[in-house]
Image (cartoon, rainbow, N blue to C red):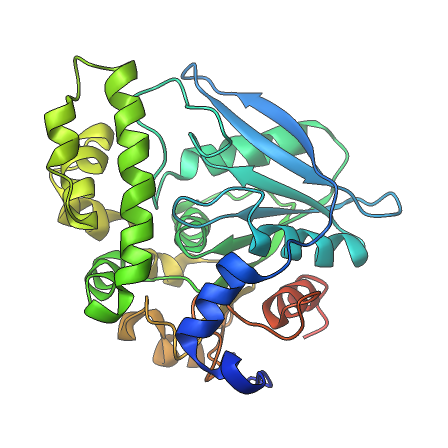
Length: 320
């Protein structure tokens, strides 16, 4: 019965989901941690930039960290998680999805919530170093969905992959799209759209034969973005086909390693499908923790350390 009773209870204003979400994304002091960038040249001619942070002492354990929509390896929640890991004997590798490292990627397509071949490329890159014999995964939001899909669609995972944590993760992409369309989520929706439109304008410059400025002007919602860019760029019929094929909930039954899903009940991005109580109750591998508070990636405890960071690290260390 891997249903976990959460001990997380923040103080004061951080009980508000929106306060927790916005403060954690925009106002939390940036955790101080060194990062060293390496580039993975991909078989299709594109590239991925990954940012290493290292434990104080040599270790054979590494955790891959995956960011959310329009994030990157320098986001507060990524650096905070990496800092917690390196303090407890892990090297951390924060992945920048295609086009998210500060340099446009080379192809018309970039990243999406289910592009698991890029995660496989990172795993292969790390294992070829022959330095690590234990590999774990931590995914946030969109990155958590991608991670769960990867774990569930693979039939022969590398033996080195031992455990994973999904934080503030949608298990139903269409449900989250519809949640973000709600009035009280306008701040997040507006921010995402602003960044995505900027990316599209770069694509227009790179590939004028595939997209025009008039196409960008048609993007007035996240659904428009996925219909006009994501779906055609990756070969889906439309946005709803993309959501259906890549929603991670359908992949949970075939996950064969221990996974913790940490989703706050007051996360305004998530719908009922992202709290799979019945499934987790009868699962050997899916551990579900649903605190009352935490918003979206906003599990504030202190500015130095968030509950989610401690919780993920302890799960990977098999402490809880």
